[in-house]
Length: 300
Image 1 (cartoon, rainbow, N blue to C red):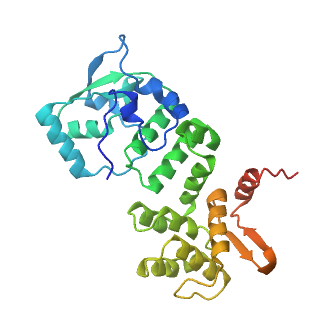
Image 2 (cartoon, rainbow, N blue to C red):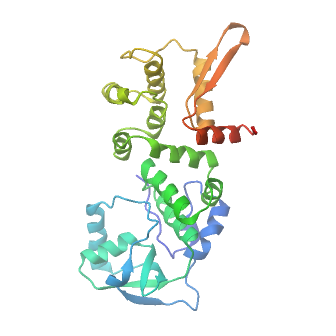
Image 3 (tube, rainbow, N blue to C red):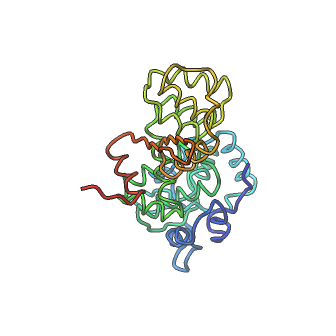
C-alpha cells in the first residue's frame, strides 16, 4: 500500500516525489498544478456544470474509499479545491474527480474549484501522472491511459514516454497488453495475472490453447519464467503440465533480458563452443518495424 501523499496545490515535491517522474515530465505538467496565481481565485461551481476528465486513466473508483472521503469532507470540509478547465458553458476536471464524487455522495450542489486553462496534452499527462504517483493504476488501466493520450493528442509514443519520464520501450510494451484477449486483460486487472505473465501470453501462436494455458498458469501458480517456458512448449508441440527445465540458465536469462528490450518473445539457443542462435518473434508488420527501429536497422 502506497503512503498517503499530499494533494494538488500543496507543492510540486509532494505530488511528484515518487514513481521515477523525470524533471522533464515535472516541467511539462508544472503549469497545470502550480499553486494559484494572484489572478486566480477559488470559486464555487455548480456540480451539474462539471464534466469528468476525458483522459482519466482510472476506471475503478472503490465505493468504500469514496465514502471515507465523503465522511472526512463532511466532518472537516473540502480542504483542497478541485481544478477544472473551462469548456464552453461547462467545466472539465483537471484534478480531483474523487473529491467531486465524494461531494456528490453528500448530495451537495456546488464545489470549490480553481479554474485554469490548459491544453489536452498537458491535461492528459497530468491525469496519468497523478494516478501513477498514487500507484492506483493496474497495468491494463495504464496501457489504456497511454492509448487514450496517443489517440486524443496525436503525440508519438516517444513524446509520451519523454513527457512521463519513461523509456519508449516501457510505453510500447505496456500498449501491447491491449492486444490480449479480454479474458486475459480482466485477469490482469484483478491481479490474478502479472504484467510479465500476460506479456508471455502474447507469444501464444494458437489462441485455441489459451484456456488450457491459463488453467495451468493459475492452477500451478507458475511464475513469469515458467509461463514463458509453457508458452514455448505449446507453440512447439504437445502441452506438458510442467515447464521444460532443461533450458540452459544462461540462454534463459539472456532471452529474458532481450524480451525486456524488444517487448516480444525471444528464443536463445546456446550450443557448445560458444555458438548458438537468437530468434525474435514479431506479431505484425508494425511490430517488425518497431523491433528494427530498436535495432537501428533501416530496410528499404
